Image (cartoon, rainbow, N blue to C red):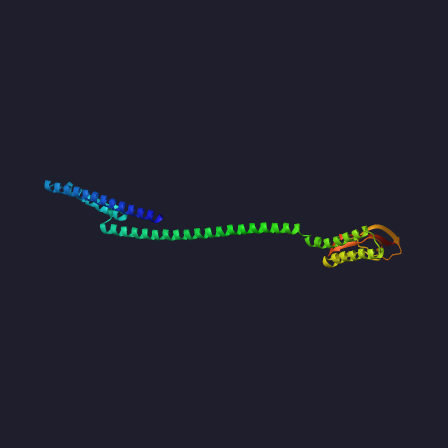
Length: 258
């Protein structure tokens, strides 16, 4: 559409140029004809007076001045046919150059618009991928938290079954209490092995250990002949999961005398 528009502008300019040129030529021809008629009239009347000669001389001088002024600043009507053709060719060359420049600019604009569309498409795709990743991460996290204790609960159910059998056996009557106690101790060892070996739980808190306020909860304190603060009595064992305290040990602490 831009190329068609530019071609129409050029055609209209050319047409206006030729119309103005013809008009200027017609006006010049009329002026020349009037001048010739006036000269013929003056010749027929035979005016040879000094005043007429002076007027002719003044007219000649005015014509020369008029020609000089035309040379200094010529308009379209002052140009000769060859000069008009040269101007026309110059305008055509400039027009072709302008059309070429416009065409180049249009190509550059089209390339830029294509790049913009590509970048916008990539940006939208990246946003969509990030949103999908965020949603998947949330779902996976929720699923992980929801079933985080699945394995440990599954293992504890086995021990729960053993406790249930021991309870049923006690209700039916115990023929040998020692055998019954051994069965309970076996369930305890099974539970300890599960917690300590498989899941990394550590039991701590022994009599004689150095008191650590980060690990032990002092229930009582007693002054005596001690070199440092130590545990002199354990009320309840403490437990850790790897390097984190699950439950601090409850102890009685012996401390040196002041």
